[in-house]
Length: 160
Image (cartoon, rainbow, N blue to C red):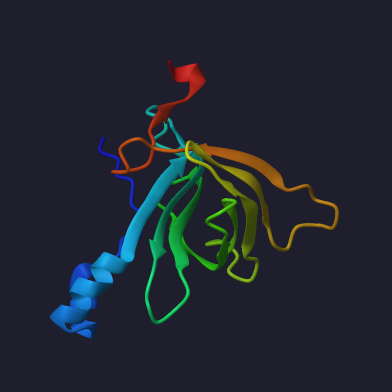
């Protein structure tokens, strides 16, 4: 059985339809991969995943303030439910990071992350909107992937 981990990727081909080749070359220089962080555990027995994952890019431009974009996964079953993050606030000096992301099963209830981006991990709290009053946010720590090529694949402890 084959399993693929899918993240939304910036498509240079799509950008080339919008920008001239000179602008595209400059845009490619303005985008830097910040990293991939994941706590997702894959179960070979069921083919399901559980955990969180994120990929982040920084965009710098002379015309605008630096910004951060990315994709978020809350894996609870299927492994490939990546959604974009938005309303991102990132302080490069302190590593403070906050963002919102859509809930694929309830688009009216965006989730909110508040935490810190460190060299080795992304740590903070996450809470889906629409939760009952008093619901505590989930504490998460996502280790940085060394490869950056895909989600970090861990085996569940009971499958080792």
